[in-house]
Image (spheres, rainbow, N blue to C red):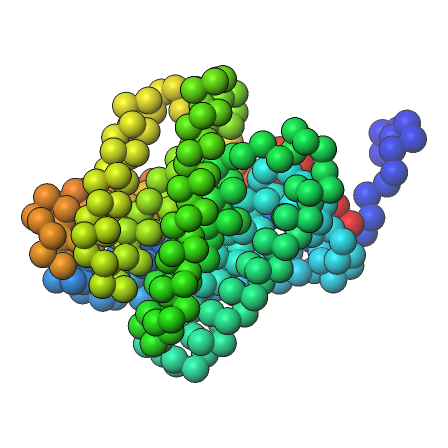
Length: 328
């Protein structure tokens, strides 16, 4: 016998009507971990199979989640705009398009043509999400325009694309993505610092602060790929400073306990490990290589655990409610 619902609408039948976009955030981190393991082949002469195996497994998970979220969008395309209204949804949808860019990196050795197609689709998807976010910010209330670390994912997100674009020969695009993303990242860092000095960050939102590490690491990586070694080394030092600050304040950052927002720890740590290994392999200093190896070990131990816990919350039916995912 069903309990009375007291006027609440009965749940609509059908699979994946409330798939939470927050699922894509740790999956983006898993893609980053696979890319970092590829860097280990150059930095430590590690065998290539761990990175390739991880790329394959994460690609299957990513495609499954695309189908699960796509089933929701097909029923009502406007649900994307609703998911973009909340921070976990905005971060998750950005991670969805950025994950596609890293998936293209995994396809390069198999089929450059397929990699180019996937990369172009991911860039196009991210551009659409960027327009939708801008529209929401302009038409929404003033308090919704407050700068948050999630802005990096939306407005600096194109910096992920050169990781696959440079091996594919998209040099002009990679240059444009680097300089445009650099300008956006600096603006967000500056405003975020002013806001941080003026008022405290609520405990549940503090894990999002880790996102500030991601653009520093990715800008350094892309700078090295496009031949800007001095800029890359500067970003390496800046990323190291940010990581040190996060580690020193780890108890403060994690004071609210585990939540789906812990997905924000995954991709910045993977990007940091990749940058430091790349700097070490490029002869920028042995310290970079050693720290990069230690970061890779930490990322390997931490990222899959966070991803598993988030997916587990989805399986238990609690993730959508905790992240305010829209329903169709």
